[in-house]
Image (cartoon, rainbow, N blue to C red; front, top):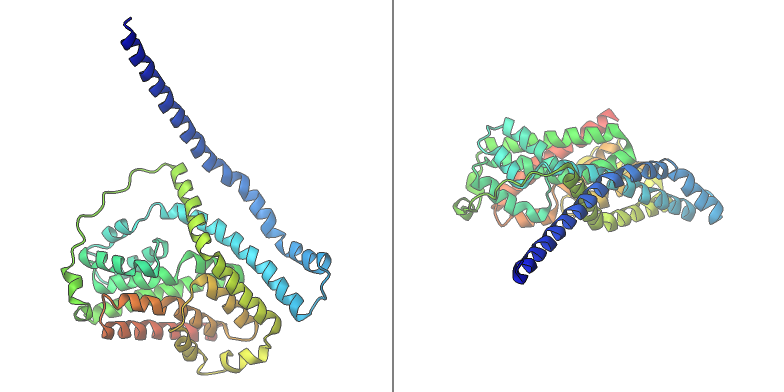
Length: 366
C-alpha cells in the first residue's frame, strides 16, 4: 500500500474515533442531566421538611439566643425564610424551565396571529404565564405582535399577565400563604389581564400607538427550533435555574431582610392603622403608592408577608404587590417609546381599577 494512502486512512480512522468519542461524551452528559434530578430530589425533600427544626436548633441551641427577643425572632425569620424560598424557587423554576422549552416568543406570536377578541385575550393571558418576559423585552414583543397582526387588546393581555403572574410570584405566594392564596392570585391576575386587554381592544385605541410602530417590519420569522430530546429539555431546566435564581437571589435576600426587620421590630398596631381591613381607603392608597415603585416579585412578596403578619389585610397587601409588579415605572418608561401618553394612562387606569377590585374582593372573602 502506498505510504500516502496508508497515511490518509490513518487520518480518517483517527477522525472517526474522535467523532465517536465526542458522541459518547455528549451521551454521558445527557444521561447525567437525567440522573442528577433523581438523586437531588430526595435531598431537597429532606432539607425542606426539616428546615424549621434545623432553624430552631441553630437559633436556640447553637447560638443560644433569648427566645422571643426582637433580634432573635428577626434572625429566626430570615434564617428560615431565605433557604425555604430558594429551595422552592430552585425546584419549581427547574420544572418551569422544562415546560418553557416548548414555548418561545416566536411560537407565542404565531399562536396569537389572527385570533378574535376575548378568545385571543384568554389565550394571550394564559401564554403570558409560561413565556419568558421582562420589562426590557416589552418593546420587541410589542413590535413583534403588532407586526404579525395581533390586535392591540390581545397584545396588552399578554403584556399584563407575563410580569404579574410569573413563576417567582406564584412560588413565593405558595410558600408564604399556601395554595389557596396562590391559586386565587393566579385566577384574579388572569381576569385582570383578560378583561383589561378586552376593554382596550373594544376602545379602539390604535390611534395612540406611535405611528412608526405600524410602519416597522421585523423581517421573516426565525425557523422553528430543532427537535429537542428530553435530556435537552432537562438541560434547559438547569439553565433556567442558573439564570433566574442567579439574577433574583439578592432581591430575595433583601426582601426577606426587610421583612425580618419588620417581623422583629414593627408593632402590629402601626400597620393596622392604615392597611387594616376596616380602613376604607386602604386598597386605593396601596395601589397609588405601589404604581411609582419598582420591584420584582422576589423582592416584594416577603415584604407583603410581613405586612399581613403585622395586621395589614390580605386584599390590601396583594393589591399593593400587584401594582408594584404589574404597573412598574420602568416598564411604563420603556413602553412610552411605542405608546402615546393617553394610552399609557388608560392602561394604568384600567389595570389599576382591576387591581383595586381584586383588593376589595380579597378583603371581603378573608
